[in-house]
Image (cartoon, rainbow, N blue to C red; front, side, top):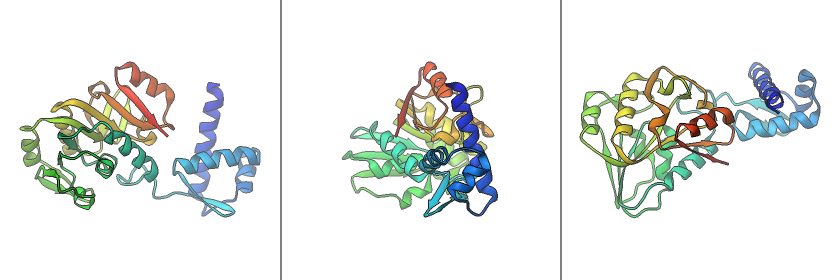
Length: 254
């Protein structure tokens, strides 16, 4: 069974490698290139489309160049939405919540159904999110980092260091069993670390399958610092089981 899964994973990587180098390919061309049946390729393409790794058109498919891990705001939009929707279920009426610069974490506010809430964030993109007149929105202040529109630096750190929240919802660039939870920017790692430490009820990590098993540049925390990891169905089951064994509740949404 494990060999079968490894073979499928390798074939998916091969499909993406081929499509990234070509403008587009038909199902038949891919089947011939990989020496597998049309039915096998169709199953593969269906799954890769679900993961948003490819774009399927009538008669052919293309590599999704916008879905690159190097682009902080890229990724499978549908998956980000379902992760955020799941995270919103942990928010209670009257809560104070931290949200970091993650686009997935920020989408949580799109799905909130509580009457009163205080949102504290270093993510300036909250200005483009749905606003609720009964909510309080607090920006940390600090130096703005483009293109992410994240607030960092001493002012942001000082603001967060004097506040406790009920829940933190944090995204990341990588989750690795050995290297922990990481992000690409040192200043943001510090901000995220403070949010995690000062959340008193629930510490929630939201991360799609592209982040599982990946190590980025700067560590923000150990995996075990979180109460919940909300992810999708496409991540490594072995890694997710190990994370569950660390005492983190792994929630996989479909």
